[in-house]
Length: 89
Image 1 (spheres, rainbow, N blue to C red):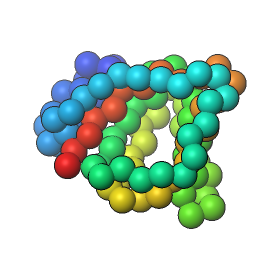
Image 2: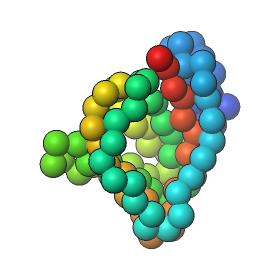
Image 3: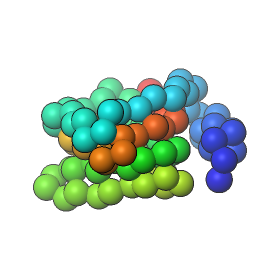
Image 4: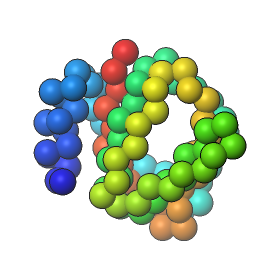
């Protein structure tokens, strides 16, 4: 899947806030929750998401989701992370 295809899919699914971003190598974000659903596509690098003690890793080409209100922490891989995400309230 390409970045453009993923963005088109986000729009079809009602994700109206679409952005690109990233994290520095090994950057982490403490446990938190969002007030919106997230659907993301890893463009480069990797991210590990931990929810309820379960850690899942996503690499370039993977899609991840996080429902609104779900507490989680984030950890970028050693090469950092570049992604495109959609937010849906």
